[in-house]
Image (cartoon, rainbow, N blue to C red; front, side, top):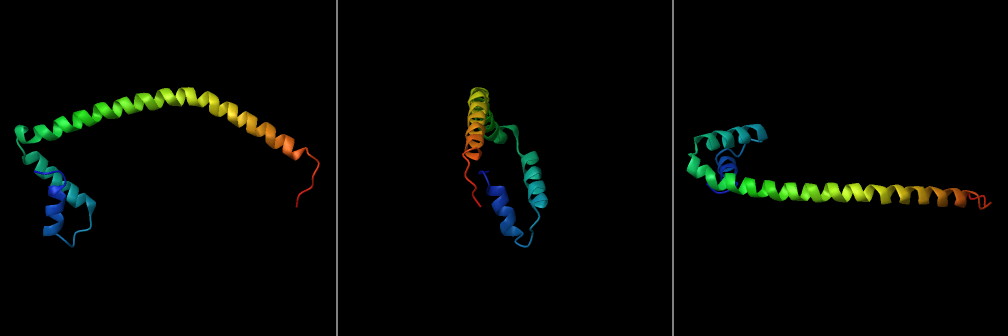
Length: 93
């Protein structure tokens, strides 16, 4: 079973079906019918992708923590410049 093959086969056999839930149910039924050895490559790939995802989340969270402080500083600098622009005495319409 190739990735996406179940969906493609189902759509070819049922071209008038537009419900995602029906396609999902067919895919779930197919997954349940597979043996553990047939599922193994997909489970291994999912685990690999999960590890990569967790690394990216940690990097994002670390960047978010350090980036928050600089974003707050930028916001305060911007508000200062906006105040000084308003105080320049010009009346723009």
